[in-house]
Amino acid sequence: MAADADQPAVALDPGGPLPLLGLGTWQMTGGRCQAAVRHALEVGYRHLDTATMYRNERDVGRAIRDSGVPREQVFVTTKLPPGDAGRERRTLDNSLRALGMDYLDLWLVHWPPPARLLVSTWKELLAARDQGLVRAVGVSNYSTAQLDELTAATGEAPQVNQIPWAPALYDAAVADAHRQRGVALEGYSPFKNTDLGHPVLAEIAAHHRVTPAQVVLRWHLDHQVVVIPKSATPERITANFDVFGFSLTDEELARIDGLSIS
Ligand SMILES: NC(=O)c1ccc[n+]([C@@H]2O[C@H](COP(=O)([O-])OP(=O)(O)OC[C@H]3O[C@@H](n4cnc5c(N)ncnc54)[C@H](OP(=O)(O)O)[C@@H]3O)[C@@H](O)[C@H]2O)c1
Image (cartoon, rainbow, N blue to C red; front, side):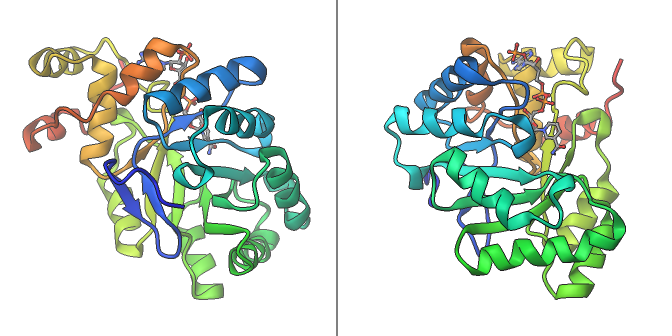
């Protein structure tokens, strides 16, 4: 449950600290995925993001065991495919078996299921949490209205909403809506939606003697937004974690907010 105390994290209650920086694992399977996760753990990552749909839970679990890092020091997220609404518990059992774990740190609904199943699926996640199989529960790709529908029906808001987020996607109203509801905003695809050659990123990067990619990650951290960059390249995995030695000024943050894609 506990992440490395030195890393910035969002306090989930219930649940443990969710490190603001994690490794995304989409589009990596087999030995490539295992090597990337092992390397990430070696350089200090303590947060891994997988999903049933990524077909790599087995690789992620094996890499954690092979790394020698104790299970309780790694924050592990996986996600329920919306097509598995109605058989949530079976899917969770399969995820735990594939990961080789007896609990998850965070279980998300990957995409909203059909409207008639929205609340029943959420209730199943809450039940799994109450049974101790998962420490925290949330959703992904949900609108504010869908978050509110779950809260109205159960009295419990999702603890996390994982959505696309990047400078070009920045939306202060969306960030505020999450903050007001106590829902942690977790961003995905930080690079795919960014022009890393943008002159504003280049200028700020040069000023801090870092790369534009590191500026993008630091921008998330300074906004208290969780970010989960994916890389299969050891040098990039290392560099993406090397973002704790500098921070952006309010003026720099404002220049990056809403940066155009090209
Ligand atoms: N909930 C959802 O619906 C959802 C959807 C999409 C993603 N996600 C999660 O979010 C994670 C991240 O998103 P993503 O995988 O879509 O995209 P991303 O992290 O924005 O981008 C990954 C791409 O960027 C490259 N890259 C990594 N570090 C780099 C660097 N320092 N400089 C330049 N390029 C770099 C990677 O290349 P190499 O691998 O070749 O190094 C890869 O091609 C996913 O892995 C997944 O865990 C969730």
